[in-house]
Amino acid sequence: MEKILKALKWYGHASFAVESSKIIYIDPWNIPASAPKADLILVTHSHYDHLSTGDINRLKKEGTTIVCSEDCLAKLSGDVKAMSPGQELEVQGVKIKAVPAYNPSKAFHPRHSKWLGYIVTIEGVSVYHSGDTDLIPELKSLGKIDIALLPVGGKYTMSAEEAAKAANIIKAGVSVPMHYGAGVIGDERDAKKFMELCEGQVRILKEVGK
Image (cartoon, rainbow, N blue to C red; front, side, top):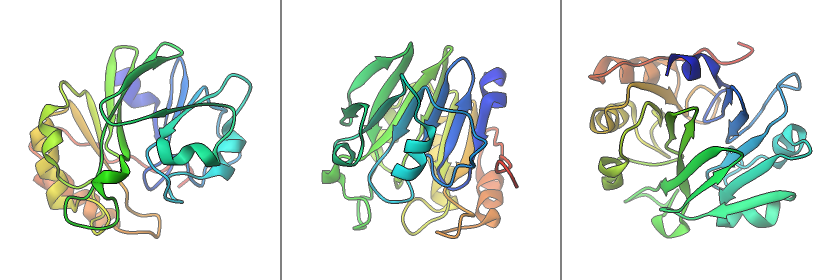
């Protein structure tokens, strides 16, 4: 797991890359020009700060595969595969499971949109990117998670307190806070509050380029 943690890069907000045997991006947004090209790009849903076609087009190369929620299909081109919650597939040797991500009682991310979180298994390590979600019952049935990437900014997603409850349910080997500090919602105080309240190990990543 430590190898994948070292390969995990945070580009701010909900944007991550795993730079290992494959270069995998999840929700790339405001990615610097120097970032490596992608083998695989995952998009959780169609909001602008998660589906950024400009970033995706810069990161694409010959052979790049894009995996996304159904509502993103019309905005993407190339080798694009849509998923729905509960589906699984394998791309370039990487196992991907799509899981639900939604707000039970807020209008920002309704359940009927079928937007996604992903469990990505990379070199035997399971990385869960929750997407934009609240504290939902499905978190109890994710299975074994090595690294959990959880939003802490509140309003559109879980607050720091709710995210800590989620982390304590998931019981990942390491939890990493996200969805803060990009001028959209939340700041570093939310990440620190999350760390204080979590029962397990937490790593607050430094944003690439900062």
